[in-house]
Image (cartoon, rainbow, N blue to C red):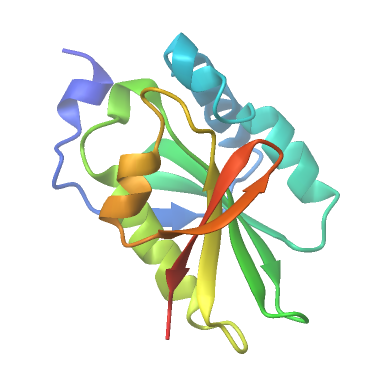
Length: 158
């Protein structure tokens, strides 16, 4: 039985800082995505590098119980009250267990602690098998905007 099969769908999900001890496993998750999904999200190595050069990036590993299963990154600009889901990925073997939904719920809890928050933005590549349904299920609504060929959506937090 693989490690992915041993993590139950009802595992406790948490967001944790990435450390020198965990960064490599988080980077390797990008290799576990199906080919079509690799076109939808930047590799975690790129995201982590970008985060280290942006004072507006807030990023965490997503854990299910004690196992890292994904990555989330937020554009956190409290000066302008702009909060945007910059990156989200759940490793291929850990998808379809609800970990992404619970990670977004934890992210929303964090964003609600930020100054003057009214919504959480996100975007996605419009393609077959893309995350449109995922975002709709969570209550995100299209804004009518398209940026960098991605559909912009937002979740009201007021």
